[in-house]
Length: 293
Image 1: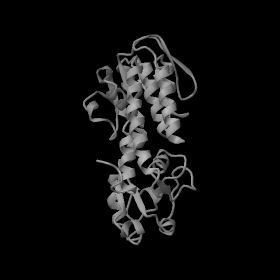
Image 2: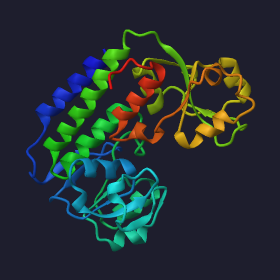
Image 3: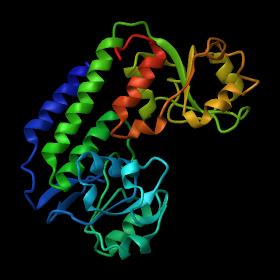
Image 4: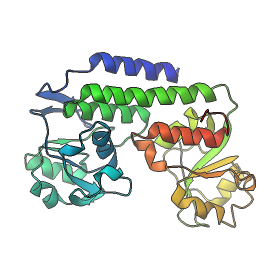
């Protein structure tokens, strides 16, 4: 059913794709507000990595004039003028660049930019949250429309959707694998685990996994004892925290640790145009050898 819904959404998007370069265009932001883009944006500032990735993938990097710094930014935007960090952008630095479109602003920064008359577009759920693959695809389409590259955006969505469908088709008939996706800042500190309603949870399910913490919501912090009690067969974490899991004396008895099935995967790609690549990493961890090279 998920595969059918993804294909249906893709086909619908292809049919609705507008003609590239037709302005003004109207798009809807995360608040449900209609945002009118009067002319083709040529001076764009991006405040979150997803938007930088989208512009890079659409071939619109030359329109960027400023980027908020983040370790998750694509390498193609290294060297662009910085407007602070993604979580604390500088209002003054943004305004000084005289952008005709700001992508990914939220909270007080968005409010101030709009008060100053700047055009701001943020997508996803309210507050700009990306909660899963549908939000990533919607972000690509919306940004594509906003910059006059709707056909290219649909083509990008098509490539991502095709990759996802191919992976799901392989793992669908395979037995589900009990897995925990966690974030551990230090070897023996209580981990934050991935629960339902998160992008990572969706990927675990699509990759043929059974989330050991699927009965919880969001990213709750649990005790090490609780993790040991649930004893998943596979543990996933970000590569930067892989050693924390392996070095934990408390977790050395986990089935996943004992069997060598603790893997680092690129967690930031869960809210990225690289989401299909992350899905493949997760599927390969859960079902070694099932996917063709």
